Image 1 (cartoon, helix red, strand yellow):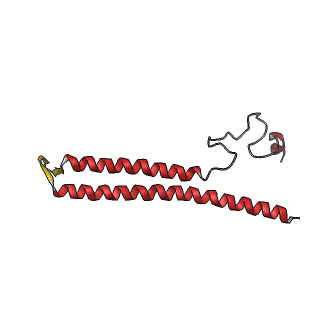
Image 2 (spheres, one colour):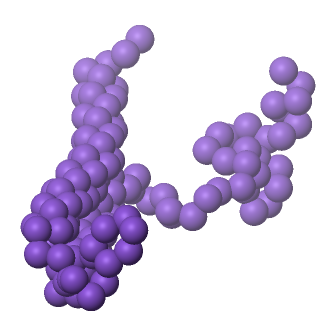
Image 3 (tube, helix red, strand yellow):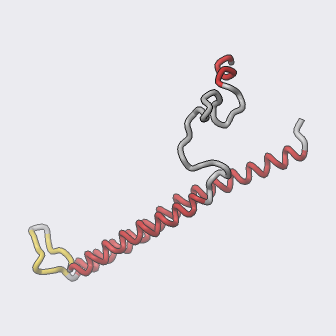
Length: 128
């Protein structure tokens, strides 16, 4: 039978798991939102650059913007990638499970006889 202490512990673990999930989703949303913001700004700068073409850099497809606008668009895109990555990784770091490494884990522990996260030996698992 469940006691009040057990229920309280399970509720606390459930809330902590929910918080980790929230941070993971926030990481994804922040990454995408910041990327879209900078890419939208870069698009508008490119469109403004097309209003002032470089007459010496034309082809059958049209004229390219001056180098200043190309440099500004590249700077916006690179800055967006860096800032969104930093924000996403920060939020993702808040969702880490306490006591767990971020490295991928083998299905077997280092001693080779117990599946990770369980107390049963491999022989007990095979008997079932």
